[in-house]
Image 1 (spheres, rainbow, N blue to C red):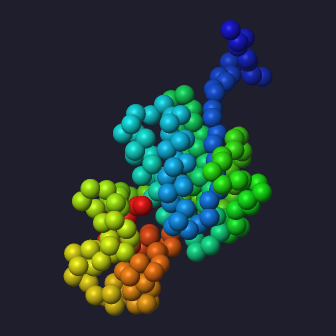
Image 2: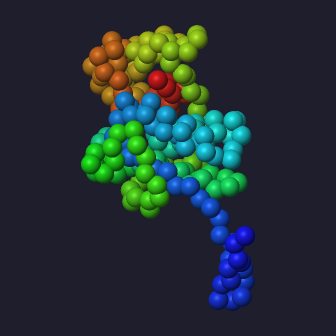
Image 3: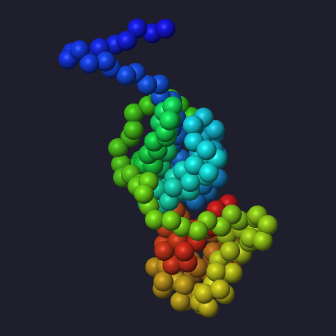
Amino acid sequence: MAQPVYGSGGEPIEVMPVVVLFQVFPARPSSIPDIRDFVRRCLAESPLTEDGNRQVGETVFRALLDAAGPSGSIQVAFRIFPEHVEVDVLHSELQPHSELQPPGESAAPAPAAGGQGGQISAPGASFVRLGEDGQPANFADWMSVALRREGLTQEAAARLLGVSVKTVSRWVGGATEPRLRDLRRIQEVFGEIPLQ
């Protein structure tokens, strides 16, 4: 059994175990499945219930949208305590360094990086899991359904989303997918976020 530790005022100091896990991802929508897998692996170690883990996962995604930029990288960091979990989602203009962080691996412990942080208290959003029963198979199908549901033309959607008509056309045609910052605007306009 460990001996108690006392501070300078004679008060006992509580030493609490913490697990720190982090990984850096490119700030692109194609990183979302990797980020989701990383979050799931981290939450497998958490003391939260299954519902708590689901809520943290969705909150991390909302924070990811808040932290997203047109370029650079996103760092997701978890601090797992015996009774709770803390999460940081940070955006940096720097590209991830593959020599420092091989794909698919996480490191621990590490200090939080500087940059713009996503807020964990972001308002709720509806998440559409692409490819699940009754859901569109991919983003292009989801975008087509969303436009029909809202009664929008590609031109009207482009104005609402702040992108070109060509961009919306390429999304609907499956030629490209939106950037992370575009996904945030899609959430604001359609109230849903399609996840792969």
